[in-house]
Image 1 (cartoon, rainbow, N blue to C red):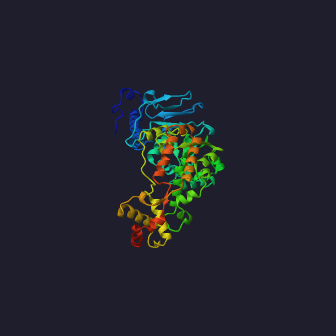
Image 2: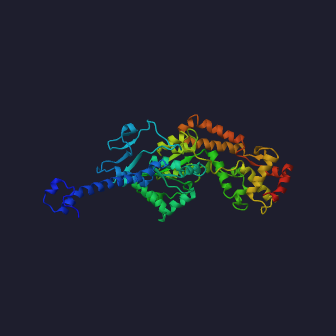
Image 3: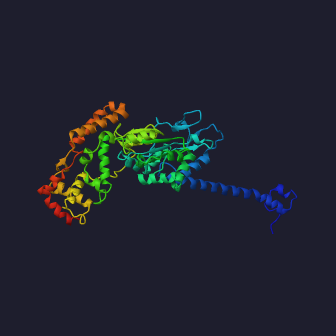
Amino acid sequence: MLRSDFHMPSTLRKSGWPWHHRLVVFLLPLVVAVAAVQLCFSHQRVKVKDFTPLAKMPSVVATYEARLEAVERNIERDDASVDATIIDLEDTSEENGLRPTTSKARWKHDESREESYLDNGAPVRKDIQASSPFRSKTNTGKVVLHVGPHKTGSTTIQAALNTESYIHSLFVDNYITSQEIDAVSTKNALKDCFEGKCSSKMKLQIKKALKENLNVIISSEQFDYYRPIEDIKHFFREFSSVQILVVYRRFFEWILSNYVQLRRSHWDEWYKNKAMKRQNFVQFFESTNISSIYKLDRYSVSAYKDYKKHFNVTLVNMHAASGDVLDNFFCNPMLNATGTCKLRRDKQLQLGQHNVAPSNAVVYDEIAIAACDAKLLNPTKISRKNARKLFKHHQEISLNLTALDIPRRCPSTQKLDELLAVSLEVEREYFPTFFASEQGEKELRKKFQNMVSKLSFCSVDTAKVLADPAWGGVFLEADEFM
């Protein structure tokens, strides 16, 4: 049996309390101390568990869930006059590159200070923007809708918007991308939203953008001719504005590129798009009213004028500065993506090649179509794609010649002069300052003459090719070509 005075302090032994009461009083501080130590170590383990994954994350920007968690953990604001706050997870002092810029306690990164970058060239994110719970709908982010048009670098822009490094960099610039795998899918996703069938992915992106005061950027050149003006206004009505980006490409470049794209639309099949497959560029060009075609739906001018009636529209000159479409897109002042612009111009945001057509493919496609029409090829034994490969190999390997050595038919001088005049007129009207610069009229004329000298506007004289004895044997080989 435990003695009542066992190791008890003298004050407890002399208190007159029963021995078991005195034992409880003696042990209680020890129990509390042990519990406090366990709680402390448990808290430290939770903190390590919470932060270690973030510290090891390879991406530039933490996930939205981490942003919200950080905001809830570090920011408590009860002053409705505070518009927004950017905090540094480690230090919000001016010494860390952050400085107050307005009376509303808005902070931003000082671009004059040296920035840090990860190995992949993306900036290290040290700041998190928190939306004020008192923000009104009219103070939310904006929507930037890039509408092309076709053949103005849209695929390149969309490839960037679907690339992780660009997504992270744009996030630092307060943008999220709402992009599907291609332009058609993006258009269809938005069209579903307009019809009340919005996907959960799109809903979540829009909800997060509104909640966190983020800007949304969407790109689809399908909107160059599909222009649901009222649907766009209604669906994005809770954002502060919808701003349209239209890219300008010189007309003489665009008209040729657009023709090639239309020809390629079904060019792995013999009997689809028959009218286009038989009409070469010279036939198309000579039969077209050049002075009016640039006003049609697919060119930049038409989209710009139509959207301008309803939205703030910016026409982006893809020929400005370096002539790089991504530089001119992400560095446009309307976008205000200063971090992404800087990284792009510093060559720290790169993009691999994509959607590149085989060199001189149209030349050999014209020969393939002519040979098929003349029944020199059996379309059931060789595909249109393989016919192009065969003729390219014959000209450049067997004959050791180039595509420029193939006989051509070119547009008349009058039609070429008309094409140049329209191209000059458009650029002079929409970019007068640029047009007057060294990169303007002078470069336009130089590029045009360069394309003329390379026979870019010419088509194959298929009658001469089919009658050439040097080509006779290759048509016989086509039936065995694999």
